[in-house]
Amino acid sequence: MIINTKKPNQVVSLIILFFLTFNLISAQQFNLINGESKLTVLGTSSLHDWHVTAENQSGKIVFKNLETGEIEKCNAEIVAESLKSGKSSMDKNTHKALKTDSYKTISFQLVEVKETTNKGNGKFTVHTQGDLTIAGVKKRISLDFTTTISDNKITLVGEKKFKMTDFKIDPPKAMFGTITTGDEVTIKFSTIFK
Image (cartoon, rainbow, N blue to C red):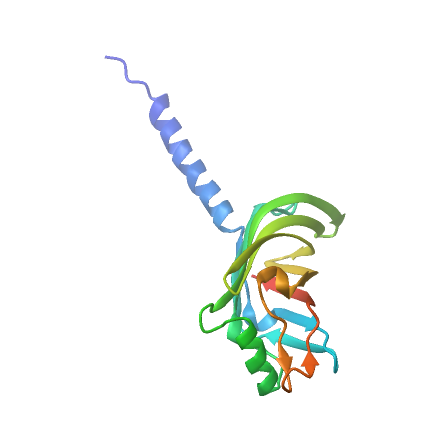
């Protein structure tokens, strides 16, 4: 009887390769750090410009390849009632418009990376498409941002304009309708993952 000694070595090599690959993949997932991230919604009204800031957000980003900045997955979620302006009456109108009694979160889910351009020194410009869900309405949007990769920290910076009515949100009104809010808003974000 001839014993093939190569087979057990191949199996051991495959197991070692599997664990090395698994560790590499798991090392490329990063979690959103709420305390270091900032997301602001800016808008206009017939009285003055306004903004609200997200106080509670979470999410994950996973890279296919950190060196080339290739993103495999990315999602972010904001607790809708954590959007605050510092003025309780405005916050109340905002939360009412966002239907926060029924829809507790606002979320973005990456669907496709269209293009990643290496700008050098760990910086990339990324053109993506994803699903943005606000007040229970999901829309496919394009979203462009800059990614900076340094050590164990990923920073995403960008902004996006859209209309509230695209998500079936009636722009909030105040003072018995005498103050009206503009339909278009801009989301600006600087999101930190570690």
